[in-house]
Image 1 (cartoon, helix red, strand yellow):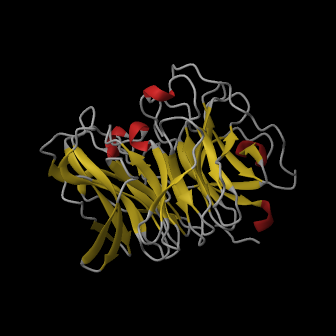
Image 2 (cartoon, helix red, strand yellow):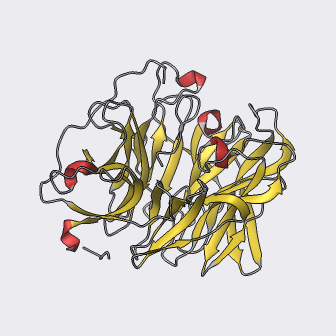
Length: 404
């Protein structure tokens, strides 16, 4: 989820029943049924002008982040019309960087601590643009529940990153080991591995998920309620995608690792969500100029459990790239399409059709839904919206018309 050598993550409600030359992507041009439409609610901020909803649960709660007036970023939880600042682990900023919210109200993410990094690594939290400041502070994964933020342990190294969790309270992400890995590049020094954490009061059970055979490092990005996790496996590289995502992988609940089919390139094969049926979405480089060098030329993909191939979801008209962020139990997929004159636009994919989410709101709205980050099983979507009147980028909830 980065551009050039890395891609930056473009990352009162109700219930209802690059410089590289690239090959022109396939584009979905059909239109969803006119009856499908959404009501948009903008969510309050923590005093800054940037916020993003990253996760929405089946209670219509939203987790994400919001900037403060001083430019720092704090993880946030929106519920019942208000916003809660989840604070930090002692450093300036924290964030919910993936769909890190379950139906029990547990939130996971990553935060600066007050600890100085003795190796001065540019760890995932800052190298991926998840936290705004460039610091020499250690980043750790966290789990938040009932007003308390709990730090998650590493695998013996300095840094950690919590990405997602399920309704059983199992948290996945990645953490450094003490091994100085020769496949690391740039300022990343230590090897990292995928982790499953099971936090209990005053105690955390930690289990390492091994990489695909022959690979050095791994990172887990999502887990379903069956305990099946997905993520990446490859070289240590820069600790943010690229060559660390040579393989998209799935770990069974017992930890057995298998490869998920990709779109044919060498790099950036990154699953971002898995639903209860075991269907997986994310982004993947197709074969093409720039891919072997690690350039980001990715398209959103959907892999259905047991399928021999991953499905390229294409892009919105005029765009070069796309990323699928989430899939719900009904098979609806949301994400972002970008790399064209129209800028970033959130999309909804269902029944074989990718649709610009902006085409499914009230006609004439001047606001732009920049990304769709998560979708719950009721079809509600969260992400980020550019407010035309104020110029602010805010978190939003889009509720299907059938809820009204």
